[in-house]
Length: 102
Image 1 (cartoon, rainbow, N blue to C red):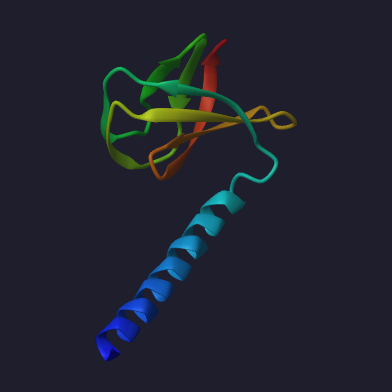
Image 2: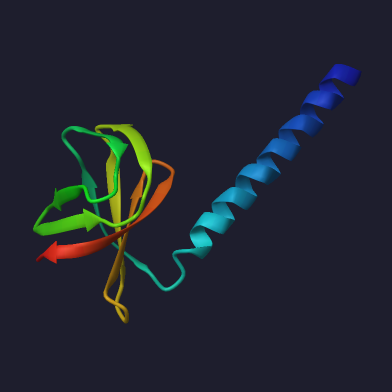
């Protein structure tokens, strides 16, 4: 009985920390709109800074220092209409990017 109670409490604590992390990540996306979603045919591995991607008709350059290991990922494009800024969501990472070509 005690082991079950400890496992339940541990699960609740882990769930709260995971939710807090998600909330802090989403806070960076306030004011952005989900523009589109793409499935990449290939991998995103290693350093992302300066990497250029073609997503549909868009050519995008990642401007954030980050390392990813994503195999055939789904990429969600977020767009801020006032500031003309872009963010990419890949797996559990949110990356800053710029539009090179439309």
